[in-house]
Image (cartoon, rainbow, N blue to C red; front, side, top):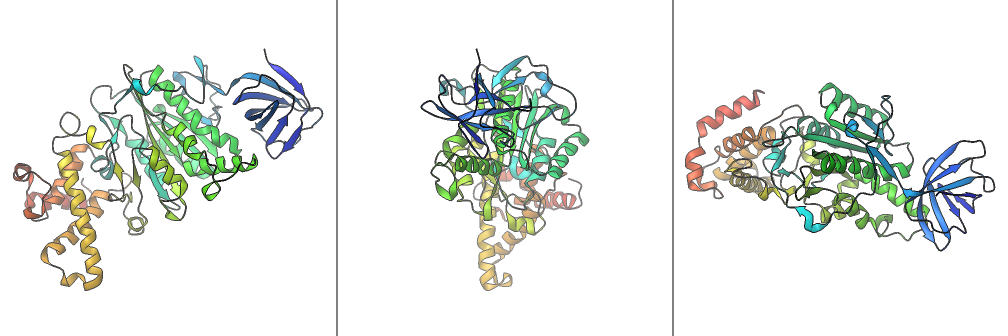
Length: 472
């Protein structure tokens, strides 16, 4: 039975306070009726004895302290779910905004998610192919993993997200049961239109469920957007048996909304003004990725965040790095040199990569090729540092070969463009072609048998020439 109260004790910003309230629960939803007959929704965010603090989704303009009626609904925020959510676009709180009408729900789920017993979690195996060589070859995304993308202001993380949505797929058993949940937080109208139009034009929209929170929407809606997106992902994965890739952008906008909300409640700030519970708040989102033993589906997360001033020690990327299993870092220098997508491979890492590649998953030589490419590109950075001091003409022959390797590696392996989709075999074959431009004695991370089978400088030059001509 719901309880209705008359009058408000206090109004402050988007918050209202009710006094002498009993049997109220944290996160409980409320319906607020104004004197003109219209209604708004809110959520209990804090309880102090018999005093309840409520965040009003649509703001508190027009509320009366004496005549406003507040009805406690007795349940947390829920979202109606069915298989029909695929191909649909929702706002940040799960209301359809695509003009196709309401979703006929098979069930309603709490947007805060269902806690997963750690014992029931299955270790992530196998991989998701993104068609992007710098990710697939060197920082492979494993099914059930949470792998964030660290970007900066002005870098093309939106284009990278679109490319991943367009190209991502599974291989092997269950490849057809793959879909994407896309959550955008604090984006401008034109960016939201680009996302929607790109998915529709490339024909992937029927397997995408979109949640869009615009920059002028209420901050409480922004806080709920990733929760609604992950609730949809969990339903599709654990109830319908889909393998779901959940992309969330931009988590920095989400964290700024949490900071603003915390400030409005008068909480003591921590680093950069963010609340002290930001770590646990982010963990409550990121840890909703995974695979359940005995289940058919999985949830894989790619949260995208922008680092203010490209500072990787900023609280948002710093805390994200503690929780997730690696990171993909976008490099501003590569972007300024027109290399897209500008993925800085030496700063990037996929901690679960080793368990989802190799024979039976990708290719037997995958780990060896990745190790050698990493090592060789690290030598490129050393050669460039030396060249900046003594000049490139004074370098040794080996260092000159490293410099040439580095230019080609960045130009054709990393900088494949946003419209090129490479298979895993094409990525690894291109890696071998690039390694074949180096002397054999420089390939110290490879088994001699692998070098004998795959080292071919003449074929490498032909392959590189074809890629440069756009015949990848």
